[in-house]
Length: 412
Image 1 (cartoon, helix red, strand yellow):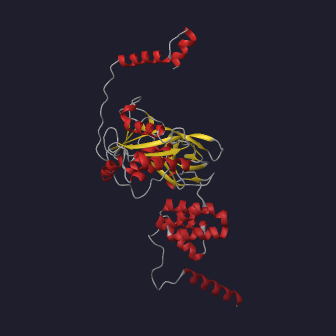
Image 2 (cartoon, rainbow, N blue to C red; image 1 turned 45 degrees about the horizontal axis):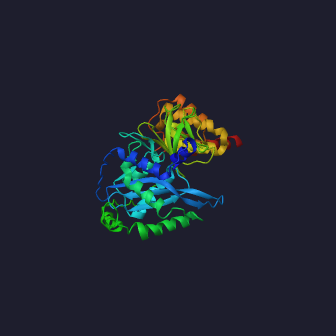
Image 3 (cartoon, rainbow, N blue to C red; image 1 turned 60 degrees about the horizontal axis):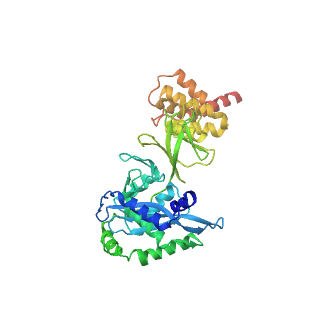
């Protein structure tokens, strides 16, 4: 029609439109069409997925009609299709549509054939394509293998292409709906009443009957649904942390200045090696502005919190922990450096000797200075300073006895 109009306007063509139409038909028939390969699939083996153009639907937020997107998944054997409508697409929406289609079918196929749209494929390559990480993990959760087509080769997924065209030309052509729910309900009714009961042009059999044969061959659905996450790349800063939604999470030593892959949801944040995909660290989600760092990842000069220091003292030795807690309860924050001093003495003179001297300090009322002087003057301590002989009384009793005798002598 456009060619005929240009001929009339620009060249004074006086013939009718039918003349141009017959001429173009001859041109189309002059070349021999290339034969197309027939792709046959076993029951439960393959599904094909694609997006198409959906109907106009009123958006509840703006009150205006918007063009929707039509997601179609078609089984390769029976041609049973699942058609879903959405307003917008993303990597998560694309993966969730697959999950909804799998649940409607009651199982999954072993292979999913798709084109190279960004939601599914990051880097197209016929031999080694790079899949979207979220999409890849969702399919792995369901035991499905993604098989992207060659670039600009839509015939590999011709079955779903036909499914998209069938829906656009038959139930959705010229339709407008007041809500997405109404449009989906209308499409579902058409799917059950007409699409499933039709005799397919290639198989010459009813689609619903062939799906009954194919359904037992589908892989079972997993018990739990996939737990969705967000993902991205982050640089490890000088403090050894990456930032995720204004909170900070520690990476292992040696990663400062490098980039890591990050996956996060409402509960966890996971840091991954960008090359191997190996899990580097896993953290609980933190509030904005807070840090989460494993103890083994902290720099040597990073000060520990009070509770962490007291816990560390208790793990070092029973009496070391008791003395440190006594110092903290008596002196507060001033005692923090004394506690560090006790831990340093345990590292220098040994845990067993320091723990015994701390026990002696608890009995006699000594503090950090007592422990330090005792260890400096007696570096070669026996393995235990505890009194084990029942005939030997506690040192405090001897102290009280001496004080009483001295007081009596002064009074006399």
